[in-house]
Image (cartoon, rainbow, N blue to C red; front, side, top):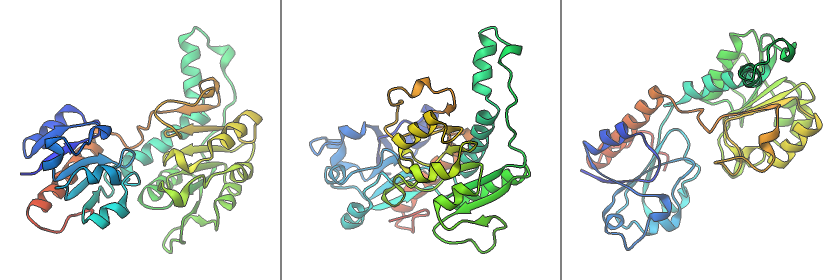
Length: 308
């Protein structure tokens, strides 16, 4: 049995599932202290890609052997420190890919068809006077930045709307029917809907900047289900205000939780609170994979989904 320190929010039924098999203690990330007897004994930390785990926190956990990241991302974990300290890091593979892909399409349709705006107006007693000739998704050119499992699932869904699919990734995918663009700017210029599903981290920091947004153009829209850090937020603010692009749908934003000052006023943006990867099906799989990683640690067996 392992002692697991849980430092992210997890619904009670999943906490119970973990606690049935292991000793589970809940702490906030900033409560990891070397003086805490629990931290002295804990051999597993359960986190996610956003909260991660720092080198300083690892130093306060002398018995730590495994960091479990629920979900696909692990960019918030100091992987260099983990490797130096001999701590394994495991993340889910494909656990929420379908959920994120579904959410990307939902955001796209909500933005193009102005569903949140119409909903608010109908609730306020307006009807015919608020209707507009809003664009379709069908037949549009969809660009996907990041073409891993999530990107390919988004491409399949977009193909169902008879969209022409383009993509950019670190390397060209040989077996894809989608059109390859050799840079984010070239991808933006080739599409009407630009969907971001690339990993976070230094390599993609502000990969979508003012030049990419300008290439997307005045009828283009941006959909972000990746990380807030991949978009230059001030550049996006300017593009939305000046009509450089038509709109954006954001599941993530720099500095989350919450919105920067003034963003609440924007009528050409749809927001969701970083829920793109959240579904009951995805969480079932996340917790199952996390428990499998902890079991493998206890049995001294190879850890599935190990990234460090």
